[in-house]
Image 1 (spheres, one colour):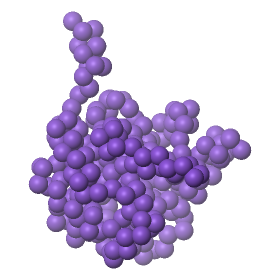
Image 2 (spheres, rainbow, N blue to C red):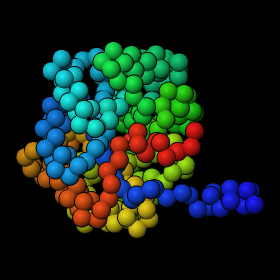
Image 3 (cartoon, one colour):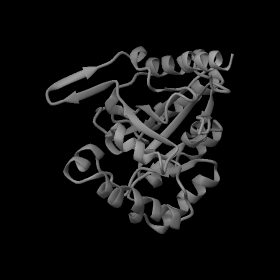
Image 4 (cartoon, rainbow, N blue to C red):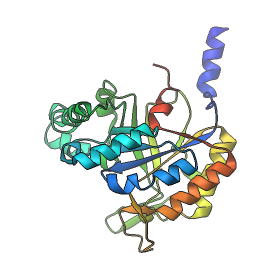
Length: 257
């Protein structure tokens, strides 16, 4: 009987306790993130900030992060030098990667009172062997999913309903992917609403991420960031659907050790 239930669990992964959305933000746009506090409070949203190059932050920025942490947001790791792991390890070694990218970031964050349990791959550059090593230090690793990806002169685009890796289900994997909401990914409000509804109907948590909040609309599609108006729409529609907001650390707790 126990074997039957194990097999059933493999075929039908456990649902989230409540369908939801997990928002994360990368790099070190501390002052811009800090300005989002009223918006997060309005929708009772808790998010994850993936911090890179923490040794370069000012005392003012650390104080802002402290306030964000007190609000219930997660301060997580995005590396010390923000290097793409695949070419770095290819030219150096995994040992050197940890020496310059992982350990300095963890040490600096620890000095400021943070022990991150999740990590976001800079540039979405990851491979399975490195992930196995990173699991020794992190409970969850976040990668990048794009609707549009450019390789040289070629542009590859996926339909939004074909991007299935962005929905978190417990005990499937400790390596996950989030859909980028930056302007360059050219997501529409309809597409975002579709993924929110899919999270609701599949009792999962959809993972989305961005970089710099843009408080003024430019509509060029080239900014390294997302419009705050778009984030407001995401949070508003999530609330209407009754989706719970999760930090990435909270998601990791639904994976068995």
